[in-house]
Image (tube, rainbow, N blue to C red; front, side):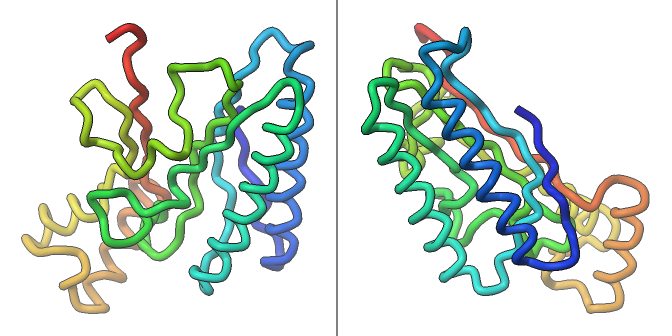
Length: 190
């Protein structure tokens, strides 16, 4: 599924749309015995802001755990994995996906049938990138950092506020205001 939730006029409006989307996906997952494809992958710009990151993440993770518990309780059990809501083992903070590098708007999430062995469940997030070059991993293609290095020959976070503003204006106009995110899933049978 590809989704781009409304940015809207308020954070509350964005939150309601995000949780309504989760509820809809949960209903689809519960009905999976009637569906041809039982696994779902969500690729989305969710436009969720995390100004109060610690509380917001804990609220969302709690809601996701409730969602997963409800899905696991049924005959057609499913697991939920939002890897970009967890700190990658090689990082010290969550990935930021916008060009300003201060929000995690973009997500790839998995809603996985209990019998599925190839897609990553949430418990694998802590070991990403460690198993093999063909194993599960995820990240962000940080073209803002590449541009800062190429143009100013220094890290983005070391730029003066003026240079940062100029760089972001050009990056947003010529490339994008969101950085690409990616997930590598294991090769079946490898």
